[in-house]
Length: 285
Image 1 (cartoon, rainbow, N blue to C red):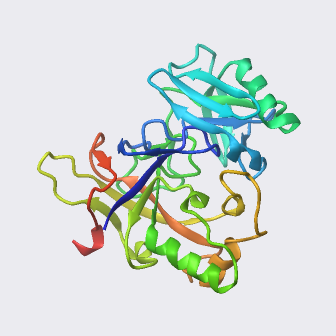
Image 2: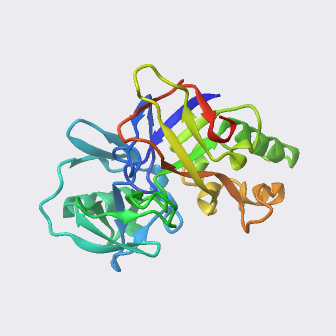
Image 3: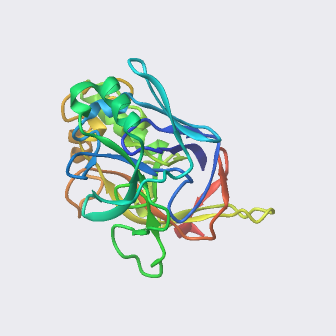
C-alpha cells in the first residue's frame, strides 16, 4: 500500500496539477483551491454550473499561477497577493474574505469560455482569513481549508476505482479515470472500499522524522462533476458513473453516491509526502 498519485487544484473546478511530492498543511497542499471564480452575486462558480472550466489548464511557477486555453493562450497571475481590498464571497454556506485578481483575468476568461464567462472574476483567498472545515471535528478546532468544498484533503484508492470500472463494464459502459473524482491523494491498494472502514492513513515510520497522519472525517458524496470528462468538458454518458455508484451502495447508511474519504491533517505541518511512499491504515496499527 503506497501513495500512487498526488494532485493539487489551485483554482477550484479548473484542471489539476499532478505532483511528485507535496508538503502537508492544515489547509491542504500549498496552493490547493487558493483561487475560485465568482459570479456577479459573489457566489462561487464550478463545473456544476459551467462544465467548460474543465478545459482550463493550470500551472504554478515560482512567481505565478498560469492559466491556459487553446482559444485564449495563457495568462500569468502573480503568486504575490494582489493589493486589492478583500471582499466577501460565498462558497456553499460559508462567507469568506477574498481579493479580486485583475480585470485582465476576467477578459481572458471571456475569450477562453465565451459569453458564459461574462461577469466572472477570479478571487484569491485572503491572507489572514480562516475558514473552518465543513463540520466540527473533536480535537481539531484548528482544522481549516481554502476554497475546497469542505475539507482540506480528499483520499481515494485504486482498488475502489477498479471495482467501479468493473461494474461499469458489466453494464456495457466505458471505464472512467480517477480524474473524474478530483482527489488530492490516491493510494495504491488491492481491496475495494477498504478506505471506508479506516480511521485514516499514515506513512510508515521514517528515520528522517517526516511521518504524516491523516484523519478520515466523512465519505465524500459525489455530484454531477463526476459525469464530466475532465479534458473535454463533455458528458459521455448522462448520469454515469453516479448511477453505478448508487447501485453499488458502498455507504448503506448514507444517502447519495460516495467515493473517497474527506480528510484532515492529524500530525505536524510541513511533512513531505512523496509518490511511492508506503502507507498504512490507522485502524490496523
